[in-house]
Length: 239
Image (tube, rainbow, N blue to C red):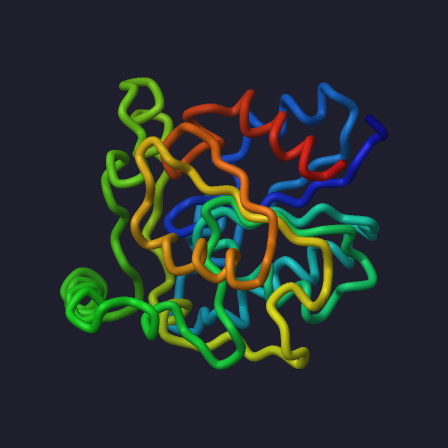
């Protein structure tokens, strides 16, 4: 297939590093690939603050695409990374070719991630953030929560996960357009072995929107557990 430009957006507690195996595969296949890390996470964890909101995450990716002068981008959002991807599509549609949500969260305008959670779960996470950081961040979940069980993969993941800026969960996505995806070609990938419960609400939205839905038989962190299959699927959907 012809060369594509991929921008891979990570989820909660992760950083661009989580895509490294997929990045290597796609680049070896001739594609241009970037995997930016959002403010306050990964190698940018020293920037963690209470001021980081969902708007910060959207701006991170917008500025990355603009400064790298990327065009015809296949924008991929994993897990919570789906939320800023929707914001980027609202602002930079002219630079995007398509959207792929990999077990990705989808928010409509005005929604927050916590507004979609059961109230007791949202309250528990808020209490944990307050206890561990004064409400600034949420500590990482164990690797098993992402369907990662192989010892080498667990080590890879847990040695790099960092606390996540808490206000990104409680601030809304504000879209100028009326539709998630802003009319761009979009698809959804569902990780099924095991399935990731928090993503179910977004899977339902994808079906409601009439988007094509593809399954991949691995856990939520597909880019870690099945990088070859994930890279091949992204390449297929991009075509």
